[in-house]
Image (cartoon, rainbow over all chains, first blue to last red; front, side, top):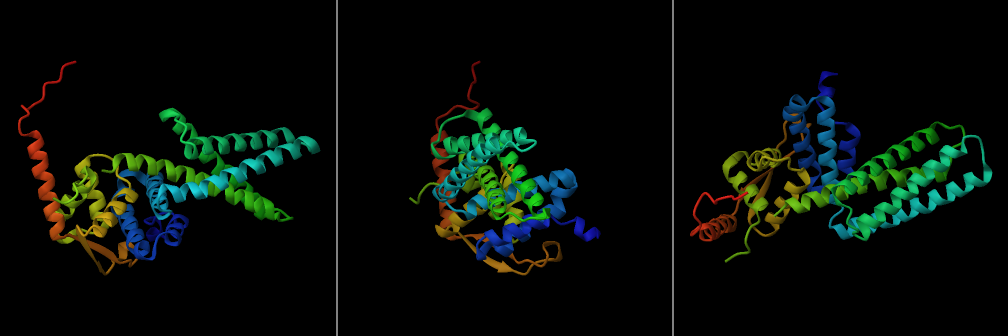
Length: 192
Length: 109
């Protein structure tokens, strides 16, 4: 039990093991686990250490996806897909007007706005400054939250909906890629 | 003269030199963090290590893991001869650039 508490979040470790190249899979994940257990945990506490680990994983995720061009190739269709889905869901809610539709329309509008902002900032390189970048990060975290909640609710529902699964996974991946590409940009500015 | 090294590349190479036989990923990550006195992401360090190895400036070899790593192997790095040359060149270039500058540089508000 106590041994288990010395280890980083297992799901992030599994994600890294899946995404890193065969050459790095063992060594890099081992390095991070060792640093986490022997240094970061005592300095930053459990929550701080987990955030540190997540940040390292995101920086490695960007690296494993390769150059920024490949990141863009993945982020652009995802953002366009979630934008289209949000518009479709928003319009359907407006037409059907089931109880509580106002909140759902609000969430759809929010997703559409974040996806558009992602395309403009990450793809079209529209300059938004440090404050705008921070808002994009907030948006990315919101997408992960919305996607995660939809994923869990769908998994627990009596009637499993395939399209909800696809959209929720797309939202989570888009959020993670937006965060990873942001860290990558900061990293690139600092390297060399 | 070989292609000049960037500041981050120099920090990584010098950390490997300083760590001697203990220069594996985790130690390099903390070493660079200490040298630069700022938060350094693992992605930046491993990307730089890969680039340096591709350019033939460092060599690496695998070694056994420890229980703290869940038994995962360690990759140890050493600075190659070309890496030493590149560091010497970088140092010489820096010294030449600063040669006629009177220190400390006066800062006028």
